[in-house]
Image 1 (cartoon, rainbow, N blue to C red):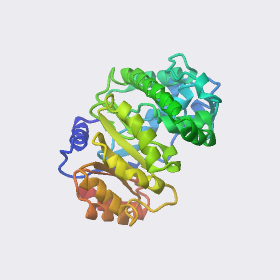
Image 2: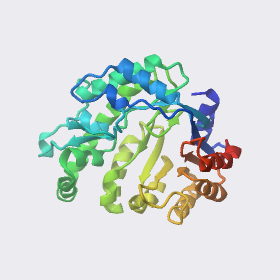
Image 3: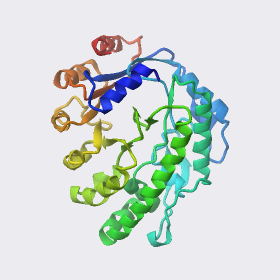
Length: 351
């Protein structure tokens, strides 16, 4: 990652950016390697040398513009790898084509002591992946930290959604005890992997973005199923436990069903950034659903991460929010497509 891009991110995180940030790439080669070929099964030890070389080759097929930068993701093969704490804490992992999944194993919370175990199979696999990525970086690209996840969403995988919903009503104090244990294990896990990351790279890089200090895109997919009162009781409880460890907290607002929690999130001064993910098949960021909420976020002095996939969407966002607190991620440009070329021309003045 170039020093000038790091400086732009540092200014943006700290509210000192003079103009909005734009992340956009140009596709220079469509022949991406299938990374699952290098890690086909959870029961097979991958050749991390070949896997990371393939990641580097794929990263080289894009031209990076604006504040975009080449990244080596933390993925088990080419699969999305969310909520890795579920695996680190004992879930059986299922490898699917595009993601990984976890099987429940908690029948009784009182029989479970949540601890981070360095010897866990997937902790070791993630360690080996990151060590090989670090070995190969020359500072031009950034590696991602694992997407550790949050307590309630990981618990819903470990325990099952219906059982957890019953738990938070019947035994809320026990659930909070387990959140305490989870946060301790989470911090230990993050510290474990950050020691690898920081051996060569500056700052920190969550699955979302680079920051000049320890960062994470906090989240709770499970929160769509609970009220704001419950959100405050459990999710904010977790955030309050973790806020002293993390220096740059973003919140991953995943879809319209989480809008009900926005007021609470904006009341937390340590949440510096809100990332808005519209959701598949839902109205985009540049829509009447999201525009008033984006305005609300900015009026509270917070940063916002938005997305545009068309020329019209981008134009709407920059016309409404020409703020240095705004970050816009754009779809990758295919230079062979006329609409993409027009989109890039619209974006160029902001690069």
